Image 1 (cartoon, rainbow, N blue to C red):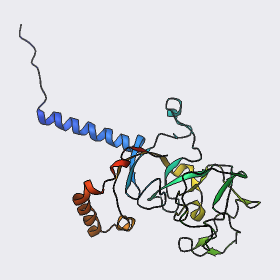
Image 2: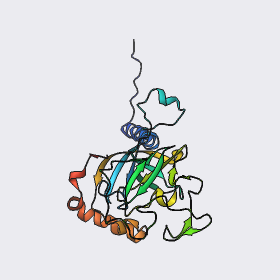
Image 3: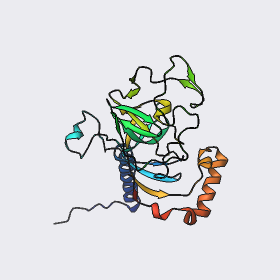
Image 4: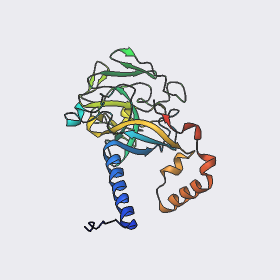
Length: 254
């Protein structure tokens, strides 16, 4: 009796199928589980530095009402979590900040000290460049007195007061479905003090770990022209080993 013919895939076809599977898994992972981001500004110093590259857990908080909530180790957002979210005024940009006040809580900032529901908050992670003052009504004292219809100069070029309906008794009440977030570098951070609350629907995930850190300049990172990109690549090729912050590799974000 003759044996049935056996068919073997060609080497090229095996490589192609492996590549396709790898691409599918990578797309699935970056879409639903883990996504990479880099830190382009000093707003989270000294905890996150310019040039830190993060892995963000997009599953950490889940999606309210999702079927996956019952089988995944999800939890609610807590004060102190470092989150990545879509910038409310430009959803194409992503910001990294720390959650300071939760929905329904009362927030107040007095002489650089945070109070939530009337109690001072211990913040070992925060940094101040200088003493209280400096003429910025948002930086060290918040909320300032609202002026309906007026534009506040010095706030990202000037903007209307965003909290008119949320200040009660000199405290800011965070509405449901929103969070108040601030940078750890309190004197050099564009955050909820200046542009408003973070909607829960715009939160991408929780910062998980620094997988690579490169000693970079914030001004250089801000340049996005073709020539600037070429210069950045050239700097990376020449200085990869010397400017990589090896001690920060795989450091957990806290």
